[in-house]
Image (tube, rainbow, N blue to C red):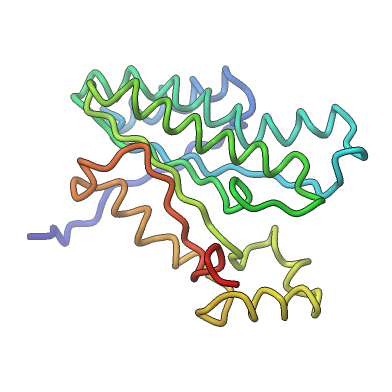
Length: 203
């Protein structure tokens, strides 16, 4: 039976590209709630440039936001989850991990790294009852994708390729995130699950 009691929640503001702030964030969450059971790594940044146009400073900025943050937060969360007998880590990657456009020179490799890091952690931490999975959103209505949606030609191409005939919404990701964070997914780890309305297989 599902409980109807309201879950306690609180916010901790942190820059997840800074290791000290990642450690402080997890420590504060544990201080407030006594334990850490679920980590969702969802920070992201995109800079649209082709490979030959990328300054190294911008490359590092994208990698730090999209991949290094996942590594640092997962490392800090691991001992807390191990201490309480297990946990769930859900890493938000992207379809760009497997499909790329010319201007995804940093974004696509960073998200591919998230998928592979998820698998490495899944293999390493299964013995500690920690499941680690990745979600691969397709074209979702967010602030980051607004310029794409406002580009009429690009918007038409997306709608023509998605069998569902629409862009996804943040709510479309909620179900898979809740599933991967729950006991229903206890025997699923190292998976990379597209949430894209069929974009990745449609032609």
